[in-house]
Image (cartoon, rainbow, N blue to C red; front, side, top):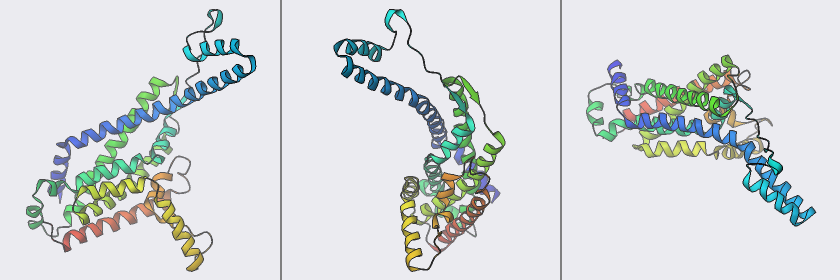
Length: 297
């Protein structure tokens, strides 16, 4: 088992896709900071344009001329006065980390990374040799879990470092927020992400290609499953005698991946940990069983 883990880590460090994903994670961090920083500025410009249109309708051509100068050029006011520059506001690192975990980017990154790791032997054509030299063959699945966990740590570190760097660049005031609670959230998210990676790896093993796992992860991240959960809740309540507050989504992995934040860290962590461990064990066991029972060629 130890040699298998070493082999998987060696392969991970020699894959360009690993470093590309870290770069993509850093880019996502910059993009989120920049878009949130830009949003109030775009809203202010839109409000200025609306005010200009209102002045135009009230005062005629003279107001239209002045409004066109202020809104269109935005370099100075009349009589040489500078236009007011909006303040940058305050950057809170913990809040931005919460935004990242609720955005759905996590599930997409995990699905891509886990699918590439799960399909590495088959892609290179020597899965038959590996499968024939070890008993049980399910060790191939278990040995990939530490690699997926390490990749998650690297991706989350890239995101947080990107938030820190660009938060200091774009904003005038930088605060870290509640670091202990943020670390608690990240640790819980690592367990949930590992369980989701095991689930993606199960799909890849059953379908024998990486595309199936990536597609499954994107579908989950797209937000379609809450509608499925709502239908199941209605069906169970109306026809199966479930209580009025029945909610199947509270047993789903994607629910906790998107809702465990600093605000929810107190009340949902215990349930999230239980769900994560159950999914991790079930998905890993099912992946091992699939690999044992079917031809791996």
